[in-house]
Length: 464
Image (cartoon, rainbow, N blue to C red; front, side, top):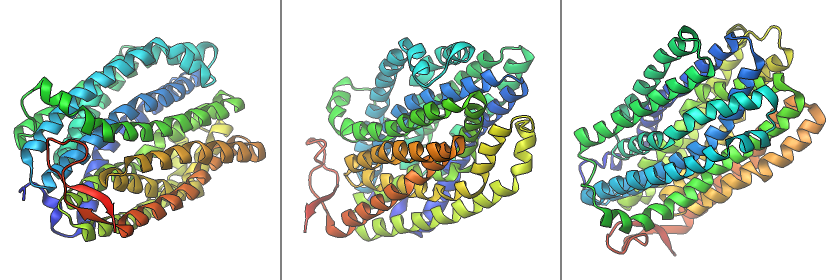
């Protein structure tokens, strides 16, 4: 058994809590910088700038989904290899995932870059807002492949159970961004251009720190071997493609929400953009939960510990509920501070949307957390396409229909309400499917179906 498969023993709730809190600390460092960006942009007193950030953010969310999908594939394969005691395989698949991810990210970034004005226009941006969002996107998008290296590198660290260094990767990147933001936005009077340049610097920092930690502390990369990378295309993409499709569902749904909100004016879009920046800061722990619980499930699944796999999923649900209640209470109490931070006194529409989120609506984030946990289970138990179906259902039928209904009834607030309500049904479906996988099937040790050259544990493939 590999010494670094640390999740095979010990209290599962503690593992999940430590992994989630440390991972979320890193994520929130990055999200906090985006949050501060929005504060700085709001201080400039131009609604068009804030709206441009909102439109650009929807597309950047879309491009970032490729990195998250590759990270899910890499993390699942590395964790399962470590659980099965195959350290050499873990190193090789880590190297292959980084190389494949960089190439895929570069191609995708080029395609999106050429079509930036069209994409931003489809979201509802017009006039000066369209020009500003296009300008911001054109600067930041070429750095996507670099960000992808950092995201995948962080997934490798989490697969080894190295929660602290995975956290530090993003914190250091966030610090770089936070230091450069006021200098470039205000000091050099670059406004959106400064925000974009600061983000690029942070992305290079994240990639460098992540790779350094993987190599120095875990010897986690194999020598570069084009032949081995080509052989790993199949196992990587077997998980990565459905994982990418899963992640793409979220920005597709968000794009529809942005388009729906644009019908109510730029102040409403600016309010939604503030909520969009506030959400990951507030619920960074839940955003991190999928990446945190995945290695715990993956290592135990790789070792054939199906009892601990089930217990890990249960404990993740308990953790999600506790975090949601606590964060919702904090948001409600922070309402006056939010009005001051974003200068909302003279923007009643934006204030109404922010207050709606920082109140009862935030409690419904529990169901998003349930979906995150379920997706982690599916991806690490050999059922990645199930998570794809859940996410696409949630962000198409579970978004378009309720947003349309509630917006027709309540206007701009109905857009946010419909988006939140749509997650309830699909969270319940996801839990039912996870339970079916875990109770209706058993762990079987046989050659890895993703790669006939390596023997890794294949999870839940035999019916009783």
